[in-house]
Image (cartoon, rainbow over all chains, first blue to last red; front, side, top):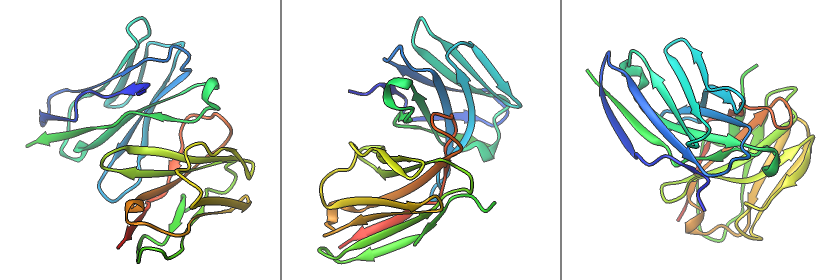
Length: 113
Length: 114
């Protein structure tokens, strides 16, 4: 049972435009959501997070939006840059799961020049 | 701090051999995680330690896998005997406390069992 779902395996965006990465979840008990970025042959790198009590968190070019009623969150990257090309993972954690991270399958973002 | 350090970066071994993966977490971090990444299953949590104590090992695939954390600065993941289906990238990650959001990942060990 996938509790965190990233339904788009890949996304292609023109450089300078907005990239929107989506994530859906099923467990209403999740307390915290995180986005990670991963380059080939490297470990995931933490990008940005959001608490379940908020609906938006912004850090530079990255903004995460949380819609609890829809159990949906999204990561916006504006403007997209070539270095943003990577796989992006959505993850969630809750007290129920001993605060272990529950991961989505990832979305490969390709920024076209 | 140099971050989470894993060794070796690459390991190629023959089926049936014992494999030991090593991890040095970030100094001061209380939680340590071992993950396995495959094309089929993505990132899977294998085991999670907090203050050197295994909290949840339900992700460990079978008895051939074992993990230890003898002290706060070192952990091992051992596979004995190894099988070709164990081929994957194994990541170690650490966090500054129990339940604290971001885990910091090592660069991973790419294991190939032939």
